Image 1 (cartoon, protein in one colour):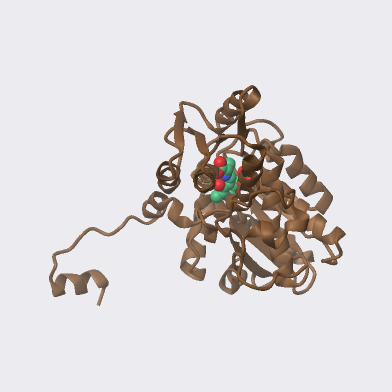
Image 2 (cartoon, protein in one colour):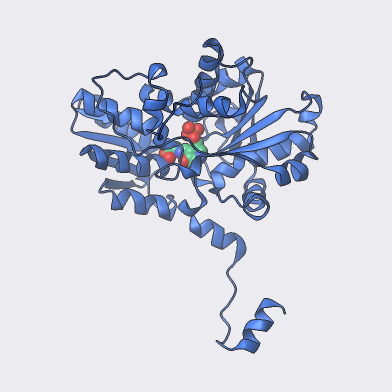
Length: 360
Ligand code: F0G
């Protein structure tokens, strides 16, 4: 379709005709979207021997630092139009941060139900500072989602998890932007999978753009779960999911069927990556490409590395493009960065000591 001219006005104005809004919908936006699609030449060489062209869709550069803002602008705008006074979500952190920010802008009360002790520090800080009512539970994300579904069943509160169709609709705009930037769809699209809303959204976006005649193909969708939280790969619910990537610490994804459809209809794969593989990719992105994402985001790159090692891209077309979505910013979770590297001990404030510490 091509990007509109003039200043960027957010994903609703950019792709209005393909989104569930009318001219009566009050648009609540923080100018989300229009995120960079970065070449990753060092990773392409290191991980695939230059076999494919690797690109990073840096969703951490959205207003609240994650891809959730694309869906939240649509969900909160629709909630405001519907006349509710409050919104609620379960979250591993990013949905909560985004809902809290957009609700604040819309003048709505926001309630977030979170697994206690399992939310990265930055995300918790965001939910609190935007004025959300934060309810930590002694249970995991899956329990939180069950509870919020019960809360909204007979109350005038809008649910803004990705089971709200407006969320998926908004998130599909990332696929549109990638096609607009490349002039066609990529050959492969790699993405972390938690509650499975985003892989569902991207697949819908790619199919829509193809149906509209904007692209000549759809990519193979490559989804990656954390090994300790890989229900779709294992084929059963995981009752006690565990991973360093707390954003995707989910054992019973709401959009399970959407993820399976994306995989099967696109001829793609859904695989699992270990925490160790995730942390290697996390550091590689930061050290070799200058891109700081949160651990869950690195699952997409870890997955591409794993598939490349197994020879998966050997049959890729020449010049094949692989886009990895980096779903959230590294600053969300500074504790994992510091833990991965151990900050050095302090030295005396003297030149000699500093030179020794530098290694000069
Ligand atoms: N990456 C990050 C950084 C996330 O926050 C999430 C999901 C995912 C990947 C997975 O996306 O759920 O659409 O498959 N975070 C949700 C939350 C669950 O509550 O913030 P998904």
